[in-house]
Image 1 (cartoon, rainbow, N blue to C red):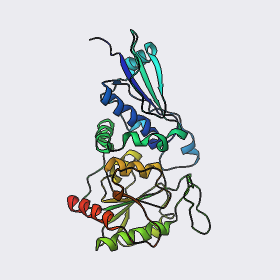
Image 2 (image 1 turned 180 degrees about the horizontal axis):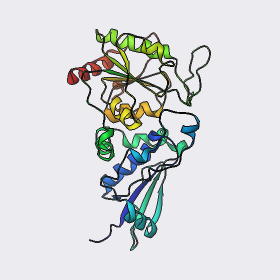
Image 3 (image 1 turned 60 degrees about the horizontal axis):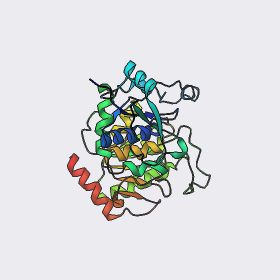
Image 4 (image 1 turned 90 degrees about the horizontal axis):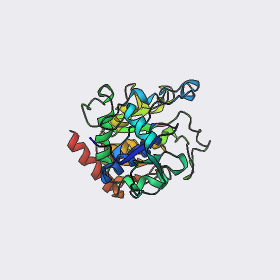
Length: 303
């Protein structure tokens, strides 16, 4: 069998899972569209920070994934050693000119060039990318199908900054915790609009004590302790996601095609071409009727 002439590889960097997912997703989709052979990313990274900060997720992503159909091992190393490297920037790359030597296109995960510059390139491909992510996720980390429809609430705490004392999070504030009462208020508004008390599941890196104002509400439970990719895929099975201002919320909703409700100014980027499925909602506001219709449709499918 002759060696492929065109390869591509995602270069994940040292950030969290969903920051690396953009490089992976762009690379996987580009390979699909251009007939390139994908080289498996290097998931193994030495990360000391999660242990020093005593985070729930130690970010050992190499335990979660296998190479799937991508080239790995010695074949990957050989291709990288022989190939001419072409670095893909934030724009969608054209197919490079091919010569006698193989070419590998590198999709880098640069934090400053992340979702805000390149996410639109994969818009509308959430279902395809979810299937591909499940295909490389080890079976034991697949989420258990829910027994009943639910609303997901993702609360990012971890290394995010505390919100201002007045509880007002600026639209351009990055890596900032959202007030817990905003999540509860938006759950109440969703339930009110739907005319029923739908079960809610909280996904978070915080402790039970941190989340007590949410967990003591009727019909609200915490997701079981599970790995990051399991949480991500589990959130996507929801009827709707009340999102934090983090990429983890963004990707959970996007990969599951779940309607997303975000805090004003904290959506990061649009994740759905139909903007009635992807809204921002302020404390105390009523939920838009079109958004509620999308949530009802998901509830009906899951019932």
